[in-house]
Image (cartoon, rainbow, N blue to C red; front, side):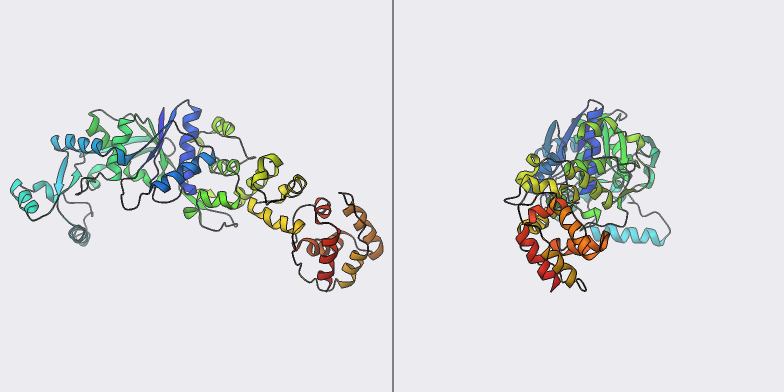
Length: 443
């Protein structure tokens, strides 16, 4: 088995692309296969080496490795030779129509109630007409002549599929500047590198029939490659992250403090119902099965990712995270807050709570209670028993219990209604900060 992930380095790696990469990696590793990382960088104006480096870095951070890597810009000669073979076999033909002319043709066909596919007018081009066009400075682009048949195949996720090639426009294979189109180059690369399984997003499924026809024209044999198309990824649930899933980058999630195990688990198990706990990559490999993936739109629920991330962060020990914490953060601090973080970047706010100078909001109607709380603060040193002894004394003095007792204290001490246990936080905050915040909140 040989699979490939083929991003175009024209931007950062998005969640949807990471899901495709992960599916390829898990499928290959489960079956003892190889995975190739191919950069489709023929677009000279948009493709950037820096984006290729960033994509590779994001894949590595997520836990996705590869056995081989290459970029299409180093293989232009290979594509030219393949095009020459198809020209010799009369499967590529030159075209000179511009965008405006093609658009006008489509409009006319639609007005007459016909399908807007390309009319193959350039197949009737004579040698004299071609020579005249080139003498006038025009360079042809080349279309692949599709076979007049219906192709059938079995999708590894979607089941039986077919494509009626007579209902499809002959695709452009080579541009006028001599560079291949993405569709043409991809088929050549898949053949040359021995790809056996193409696992990709559903929005590429419409090209499958054309690619199978190209494959057979280039090799002279029926293609043995298998296709599987992952259902479209869409936002679901009520919780939203900063950007929609279609433009949500792995880089942004990493910067927000998403743990790679949480993201990998979320993406690997979309469509399977139960996400379970954040899983190690070996466990994801063992459990991954293309055949179990849902054949409908796959829901990306940010609340599920945040839940998984909270679980993943909550089990990290201090040594594993110390270099990503604010300067001066201690093990006691990390153990106090780690179970309350949806994203790691929230840790800076809690460090400010225990070591900084936050200003709590005034709490209306609580002046007497908060003044009493300040007066009853025990002397230091403090440990994790101080919260219980202090609130017990405060309850006896004021008669308050439950939320009426602890909510004003939490707001005054942290500025937040929810968060880590105050039993662990209060000793870290210290008596001086606690007293100051109680006075401010009581004002």
